[in-house]
Length: 340
Image (cartoon, rainbow, N blue to C red; front, side, top):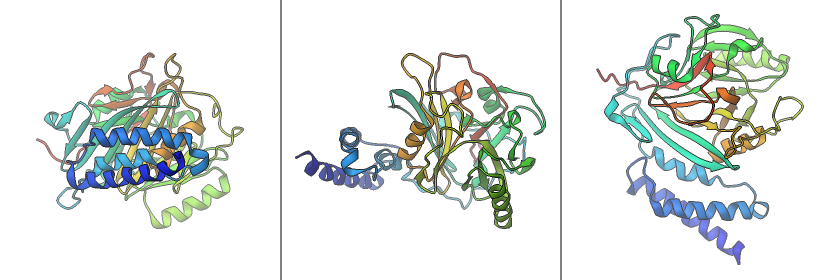
């Protein structure tokens, strides 16, 4: 009986979700749709073995957030230059859980997944230049650090997440806003490269493979931002199986931070709180599953532990018991509209 009802419920969810694009203002999800989604998610968890992880219910519902199509024409890109902040956001455009203008949509959300608190930012931008990075110092060789919240404030970030703390590692192709830093392949670390179109490319570990990948990549693209931490969590729409002997603390529940690409100029930032009685954190396998459920085509693990910080509107969105740790860098999104 249950197996007969499940596909019917799935069809209802999909019909209702598609209707949202035409009937509901962007960013809104009806209570009925949310209730139906929650019911279907519980069914899908029970019947996962029977039906497999074929559908991504969270991604289906979340797509309603971006029912507006942002225009790229008429929006001037921001300068792609290290140390240059984004435009100043308009205070009146913030809501409790979002921000919107002609160049950017941000929707914030908190969920309970794997018995832990998961904090999510969905972002859609009009130009690739609005996906930006910033460092605590004034040049890539600087060892200076600061809180993610402070760095975000200095650069007019609407929403931001900590980066990879690149100074702690000795390998990786490190670029920030087109500025070239360390250029060294890694035997063990997966890499994330973001090109001039704002598209993600995850390069898995192995020195020879990364050298060849870099040669092929730079023949076709500009490396705007490059990170070395990982591992890759979702690659080309497929959830990655992480080898436990390759990645430290992969099997332990820890605070996690990650970034994913959902679609063209559409992204997600995710932090899982951990090391607390009510929220233990996630293993790397669990974190990969979270990013996969959110609909990521590409997803990458960033510096975790107490570094894992999601900032929105100048405040730490993932409220946590531990004091905010200083970090070396952030990834952030800014408005391209000149509000002044």
